[in-house]
Length: 121
Image 1 (tube, rainbow, N blue to C red):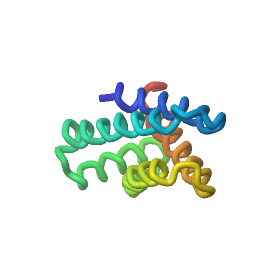
Image 2 (image 1 turned 60 degrees about the horizontal axis):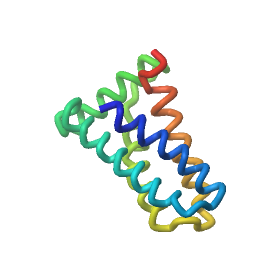
Image 3 (image 1 turned 90 degrees about the vertical axis):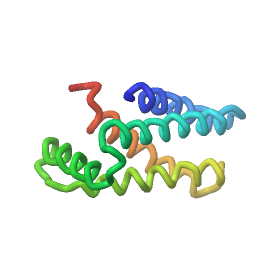
Image 4 (image 1 turned 30 degrees about the vertical axis):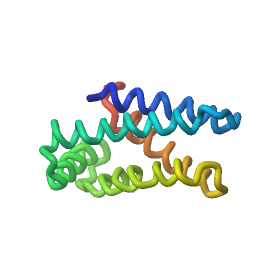
């Protein structure tokens, strides 16, 4: 399951370079990264949460409590928002507000990979 999000994050990082350089392959690469992200979400909800929002919320609260001492699972809603924002960016590619979307997406990836990710623990 972790390979899907790791590959998605890596492809997204390459996508950012492609966006910066306005390279034609950036958008298809972003779409592939998003597909891998969706696979990660589906695998996580299937294998870890039993397709239960309540279980996902409780697990998010547990992780937040362990890391920050705050018993709050509301971060799951930011993940839901992230899932909705990415395809909006794919549709509205290179529009002026796209920069704000990517700032949010970078923030989410950093939180998921660096703060909540298990690669460094």
